[in-house]
Image (cartoon, rainbow, N blue to C red):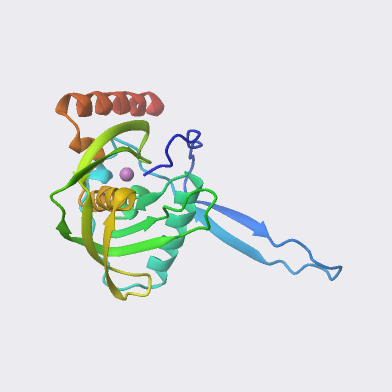
Length: 208
Ligand code: NI
């Protein structure tokens, strides 16, 4: 999910880019070339068919998965967004990155691996949702107000949480992605078709 009411996300072009950030020199000793690399990944945009894929569970948290998680955070913060599912960067793995910290608060990066909804409340809540894969489109979505979710953390430790408010909505939105579901699927057919048509046209124009 994107930051709300922020400036439109900058256009993401090309394939994964590496950004080299040298550390600032702190003394007169010739600087050693210390290069930190982070890779931004392209975010898939509606109507990319890959967004409809059901993602596979993560079996082992190896170096590839850790790198994917790092890149997902870089990509999410850059967008800027508050939640991202791995399939949105084209990798059909059941991984979600999230940071619901407000701009003035310290960062709070959270990772959910193989998340599963164990329980949802009868009570509903409505939030205006958006999606980094459906840029600049927002609409109210009603979902259960509270959820209980089990997942693995970054270290592969099993955890369980109960969420409410924006956290609950964001978890449901991102878990939907892992099942090939987009927030527009929760809207009326009329609204959904209108959005689909608009993005299909835009994709066709961009391909010309
Ligand atoms: Ni989304």
